[in-house]
Length: 81
Image: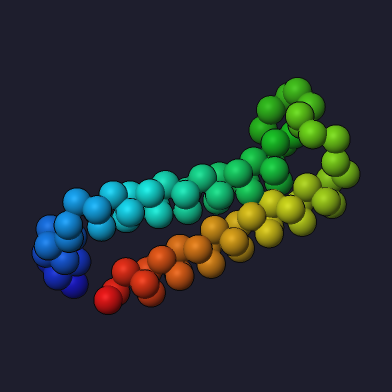
C-alpha cells in the first residue's frame, strides 16, 4: 500500500506535486485555525484578538475544522484519477 502510493507520488508531474503540497498546506492551515479559535484562551494567557463569545468561537472553530476535512476528502477524491 505504502509502496504503491510512493510510486504514484513519483509518477506525478511537478504541477501535480505542487498542488498536492498546497492542498495539504491548506488542510493543515484550516485545521490549525479552527483549533486556535477553540483553544486560544486555554493555551495563551492573553485575550483572544477578536471579541466573540466562547460559544460562537467554538462553533466557528468546528465549522473551520469540518471545512478542512471536506476540502481534504474532496482533494483526495479528485487526486485518485
